[in-house]
Length: 390
Ligand code: SF4
Image (cartoon, rainbow, N blue to C red; front, top):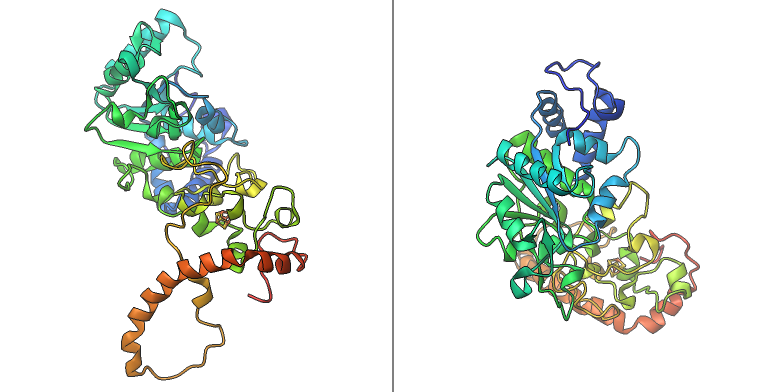
């Protein structure tokens, strides 16, 4: 399945990309994507130059136990779509959902793609893999999912697990997990795997990962779970548009109440944003403003975290993994003065302040009845919620 890209070694403006996207537009989209994921403009320029030289990595995309939501979210981007840009960046040589081939023809296409770029292609895996009873719960071309995964991975240059299912099991692994659905890191032991959890994973994160791989020939910096730090380095709570309401103690108490309608914090409805590392609040989905759970009024359910989504009860309050102390911020009108010897104790005070932040947050939640009632009376309609009292 080759892209329709018309590529050349030139860098002139007449170079055309997939679906007639011109070079200027292509550069703009890549630059926007790079900025969205924290990469520089010069990285985008390197990327475009690499594409023009025909440096598109071959990608083999396998499907196992999943809903195809990650592929769907990739295809549902707006025009000129991320999918078009992505398919100019890569040579998608095998993808069971998108390819026309079937049966023996598909098997031959897979083997040909492996042979042609052995040791160099990127293997993208979508879906969990059933492991119980020797993996008999899934068979493709007379092979179990486990065998197929191991066979293709043995020749891959890089391996990416897209979505929560491939990353750690996702919804097919929810209790009682009758098929033994597992993330691919539990099968490909000892292999370096980039995990992009999310239900679905945001396609910009895949684009960012491939951008770096194509432009620099290396994978992005990963955390201890194999997640790119550019996308999973902070929690939803640390960059949530409702955070001002959390800090001010304004909470929705139940779905449809006044606090919910006013866009207050969803913590008391079970929002797992404080313990979920993801970038949904920044990247959102389908390039539509507020198209992400909290933006639409639903609590985050922690889909990127193995021990949260499909494990913790929906309404159970989240742990706040990195409490911050809003009530101890320095006032804007703080008096100016010299640095006294007392300042030597400042470090200790700051540490104490941060530790105290958790206590203060808990205290606020405990006092929520009075605060929420007062907050509801403020008749706020803006979820950014800047309050004159804060
Ligand atoms: Fe946002 Fe949820 Fe944190 Fe409230 S608890 S500020 S809704 S992430």
